[in-house]
Image (cartoon, rainbow, N blue to C red; front, side, top):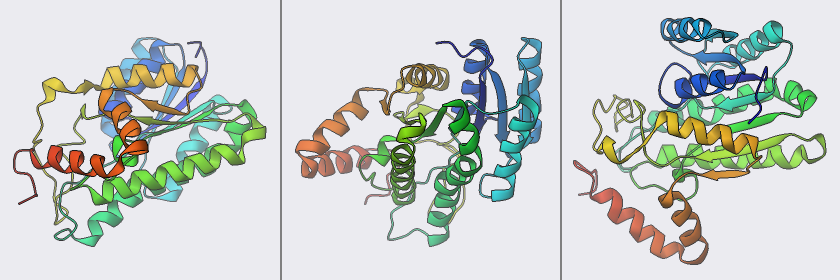
Length: 270
């Protein structure tokens, strides 16, 4: 994987998969530009990257604000002269039945998970086209099949898939690589900050972290996927099984998903 001096822009870079991606690409010799809401956390990561000799930059970025996304892309272009890889990683989750959820929760999920990627891609695309680079959307198995109790999350990831697939097709003759990365359940704070029916944070996770992929493992696989110009990166058995079963027995997959999510502690399914 030759990422030496490549300019990589990462959203949601202050924690979890985004932070792991920053360290992963730094270790591969890339120049890293980070965006997230917490400027303090980004500054701490940047300090550690500088100590390793990595060229990096950061900007406090709320991806629901178009101007913030434009400014982040502008920072990368101004500081390093262009962009080779954009990784749209910023995202939030939810856990509630559609019967009970406040519709503002679904809007919030769409604003972050979908529109955040649209804004960043819009302003980064000319630079990606010039460098024949890569656009990556960090999605989920929930973008392959509806995940019960996560209507807003699944809807936002389905929208992300459709958007990125169309961008890929429109840029077939411009040598732009587009990859959708779909990790399984990952041990990150996204689960702790997942929104409940009234929009408050979940605060705790119903799942056992020991059986999940780690953020550094996900970041390493994403880097390998980019190097190999993968279209869809399914990272573990459940993701690959979902894609296969959906193709041949979608009704069976409905039942499997329902039964699996109903077994969660404090499941919203009565």
